Image 1 (spheres, rainbow, N blue to C red):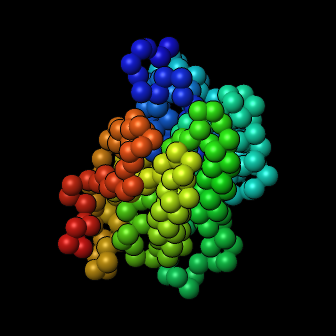
Image 2 (cartoon, helix red, strand yellow):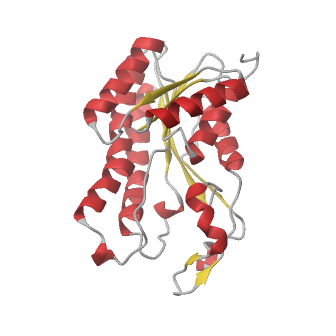
Length: 258
C-alpha cells in the first residue's frame, strides 16, 4: 500500500497505452508513488495481465479499462467509468500511439494515415477533452495532463510523415491545453522521448535509417528514466508546470543533426 509522503497518495491517474512499453513503465512508477492508476488500451487481455503484475509488484491499485482512444464513444465510456468509480481524475498521461512502416510517403495508404492520426492525435484530443470536463467540475478543482510528444515532435526521421505530423500537432495541443486550462487550475506539459528501450525500439541496436541515407545503430535508455521524469512533472503543485521536457539518450543522433 502507499506509504505516507508519496506524491501520488490519494490521487487518481490515467495512462493511455498503459499495458506495454513506455506507458506500462510510467503506470508502474505512478503506482509505486502511491497513485491509484487506471491503464487503458485496446487489448483487454494485455491490460488485465499488466494490471495484475504491476499491482503485485507495487502493492498499489491498478485498474484496467479497455478502450480505443480514437473512438469518441469509447473515450466517453472510459472517463464515465473513472468518474463513477473514483469521483475525480488528477493526472492524465496521453501516451497511446502507433506508427506505420518506414516507407516513402507516396506508399502510405489513406487507411494507414487515418489510423495513425486517430491513435496519436485524435485520441489525445478526445482524452484531453474529457479530462478537462471532469477536472473543471471536480472538487477540489483542477489536475494535470502530460502528453507524450516524442523527439518527432521537433525532428523527423526519414519516411515518418504521418507519425511526425501527429507528434508536431501534439505540441500545439499541449500549448492550447495549457492556455485553456490555466483559469481552471489545469496544468499541461509534454515529454519528448528519445529512444526509450522497448519492444518498439528493439531494432535501434541493429541499425535504423538516418537522414544521410546510411543505416546506423542508435543508443537507447531505460524506460525508468522516462518514468522518473514523469513522476517529477506530476509531483509539482498545480501552480507550477513543466511545459516541455526532452529526455534522450545522450549519444543519439539529434543534436547537430547527428
